[in-house]
Amino acid sequence: MSESDIGTVESFEEEPQPKKKNPSKKKKANKTKKRKGKKQKANKKDIGTSKVEMLAKRIEDRQKDRIEITLKARKAFVEGCRAKADKSGLGEVYRISSEDLKALKKETAAIVDAKGPISAFNACIGFRDTSVQMLMVLEKAEEVVQENDVEDWFYYQDFNTTYTKVIPKYPWMRSGGGVTLFWLVLYYAFTPLLFCSIKDANICPDPFGDPLGSWLTTSYYASTTLSTVGYGDFSPDTSTWYGALIGTLFMILSNIVLIVILNSLLTLEYFQKGLNMCAKNRLSSCDENEFLHKKINRFRNMRYIQVLLYFTIVNLVGLGFHLFLNNGTDTLTDPDFAEIMRGMYWAVQTTTTIGYGDLDSSLVSDSDWQKIFLTFYLIFSTAFVAQAFGLLKSLNEDVEEARLRFAWERRNVSKALIAEIAADDDVVDQYEFVLASLVQLKKASTEDIEEIMTKFRALTKGADTLSAMKYLADQQASNAELKKEMNSKYVAEI
Image (cartoon, rainbow, N blue to C red):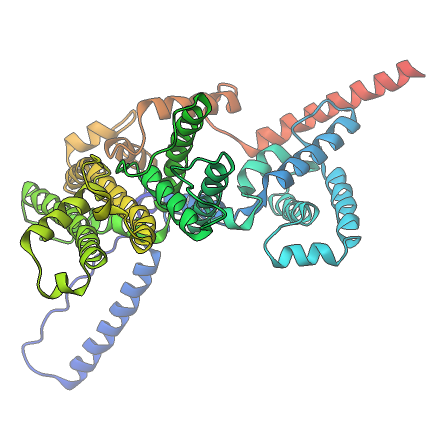
């Protein structure tokens, strides 16, 4: 194991202090300190340039720089390459020649040039043209082939999964916020259309005489169903078999929409920050000499406080609006304790999505303003409570990760450590250290390693390494065999 395998580490001896003050020696010492400072800065730049780190960064950068294309564009790219591979008659379905790649790019460029102004307008509003995306992929493919000097072959299947990333076709489906808004609008538009079309008087009482009131009632009912609260003040008419069937299907549909919306919300940056607010960085920012159990206890307490804070804020907002909407400003200026407790009872019943159905309609949805407020409040309270439960769910995982990292960070060089992570001798190189650390931190498992090594053995055909020279020699032999086979077929046809 060489020093280059584990990084550059240099030590500097301190300058001996002179017994007497000497201006010339002082200047020399200052120059020496400056040289040391420059050398130390250079060494800091060298940190993080080991082979493992450079390899990891190269792979990570390549994943970040993947070309974003729609599924339709990816299928068009694969099918175009496959058609070229089939046309060549070589029986190689996973690669095409560089000449076929250039020809496919030329054909796609001609299609793009023939596009009219409609294509440009669609691009402005976020809709991506399939041919334009395919041309971008082919240009990148040609660039990769030239950079890697991969003879005369382009392995389009490998390129497809490595250099491209599938995104939704519609622009509003490409972010968590867009997906959430799309499904909410669709859900709240579909609910009144459904229940007013079947003339369910319980949900849509008078769509023609009082369209606004009917719309508010159906929207309020949609919120109580979506949030799984179900106060019991409004329910579908189940006196007929089709009414009961529609009510059943609507409840199932509402649960599916709720799952989709919550999953989309959790991808938003705001919710991600909330979930990670008290996580690993908080554990590692404390005193290094502090006992781990003290750090974990403080971490748990912070997480519980965070959840309690979310829950309290949401319930106080509900309590305030409930008191105001039911009793006006008098309740806010001169509150009655019994009324406050009833309001809190309603708020907690709402945010916990229990909904016993024991509340009088005047306390829940007696007026249009109450319905408007509840329509939005039920959705937001459900989202915040879901985030709180997500924090509690990830608590044990975060604590376990902190324990593993705490133990790993405090390992020092010892004979036991070397014997534990060395593969077959008493020397540990950077690759062995990285692999052992990933397993110890539970970032990888034995099953993962076995699966990876199975793939490696299949690629190397039992050898210990993948060699570019051996690969080129095998390819030359394979190409010669293919040409020989094609010549024999041609002679046989003649």
